[in-house]
Amino acid sequence: MNENEGEIFELAKPPITSEKELKGILSAQQIEREWWGDKPEMSSLEDLKKALESGLASIVPEVGKGYKISEKVPKEFRMLEKETFNLLNKIAGEWAGGVTRENGEKVFLVVSSLARTTDYQRELIAAGYPAAEHSTHTKLGAFDIAFRWLEKNKPEALQKLKDIIGRLVAEGEANFILEEAVGVYHIAHNPTAGDNSS
Image (cartoon, rainbow, N blue to C red; front, side, top):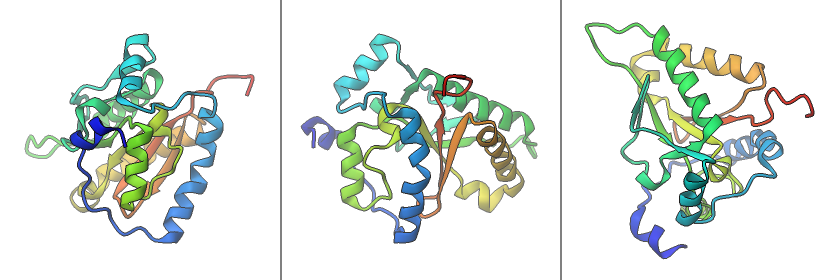
């Protein structure tokens, strides 16, 4: 573990994930490994800093159209590869435009995970989280959206999100993995979308 990361990030008690669910998550992630296989992993906070400086990554604002970042996401991890950030904005923006607000209530998606370092990913695995060793999060190509609150309080808004994600998956623009025990939708951008050579 990177000594700086150990001081910054504290992990909550992991949910109990069945072996069947974990196998399903790892299987569903295979397409992302094909898409992102040649992209570098972020091993450290220094790698994340370099990704920003080089223009590879963009900072994800705490609040965007239709989304907010969970306060549990470390500030150092609040970034994505540029096209992945565009995908987040596309999903959240379309979703926000189609969700009706009652009594002026603001409804938004909660982004619960963005970038990760490989050290942090290993910590998640060691702590018992359903996490893949070579996650697309470590390549800045994936984000997670928490769904439990919507499921309980706004099922029609959750259905709208499912419809948007389903369409993007069908169009080959994204991959989707349901992480039921954690209560998130894992969404990864396809960097080869629109590339006729693949």
